[in-house]
Length: 426
Image (cartoon, helix red, strand yellow):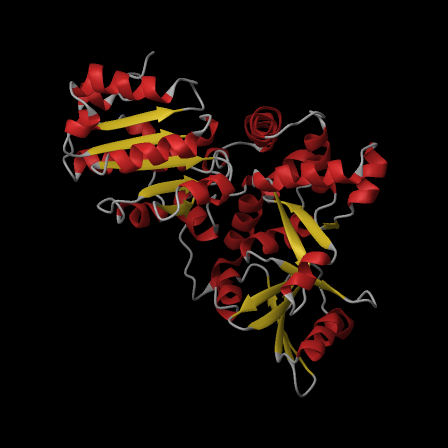
């Protein structure tokens, strides 16, 4: 078993520059937990930067903390499938020259841990028996949220969601400087940046790719790998093409009402099978559901739902949709981390409903040149029903207010990203 190629610092005492990349904001948060006993669990989508973040922590241990290079072990279960005990024995015998329990302070980085069979129990035993070992875990699926890890590792870990770049980090990585207080001066640059950010999804590896390369990257390197490789490893996937067909449908119709019966009828599957496969896609963080808003959360769970691919980059790659006006509602839902929309029995509809403390804020997205009073009627109906004072309409370029004397809807162009976040306290 070769573990040496994963750990070049054992020979050189340093990390190769090509492994570290540019540091994310999350880095400072993660390294602030280095001296604590609990494990650090990094989870998120494939290609979002979890492995790079691990290497950056290793680099920090070597440079700043002056940790003995031999006391840092990295292993990716995505690359090799081995017996966990064999891995540790090889590390003890060939590298440490002693048992784990005899070493003063060790750092173990276990990448794509969910691919190790029975990993929660094995990691729990390692943690409990070796208090001097600091453990870092990563997983492409929501491993920190999985039932088995919550039960087995309760109280033993801190979790960190590694997401693609948001717009602020995107601008930093692209070396673009924008004065957030004077957006109008940078309007064209912001519009171009938002469109490119939507098409790349904030995935660092996609930032320098052209349109053709980008589509191929997302389809083959990320989506197909998750659908055809990762999902069958975790679930009983009898219909191997169904997850991809569902994902393609959601990309063609982002924000569609999720109707398992109709989907099943169209695809030739039982609705329960379709529901199960949608849950697999959700577990793998490839899709997000929005729930029809109600002050009663249980009622929301039972009502109709909308579904989006979790990134506008996935929508663009699978459907060919590259016009931002088509992607705008999904982009805003992702940016604002929305969990709700609203549709009344009379079919009045609001795109997004956000929670702001104990209050809800309705948000509508209209990518058109002129906003009229009829465009804000659903917002006023929602505010009247729930006793709210304000709502927001995100427009193409229009800016202003609609007021009925009791309630106000502000209209803000989508490219005024920072005022929108300020208005929503994000």
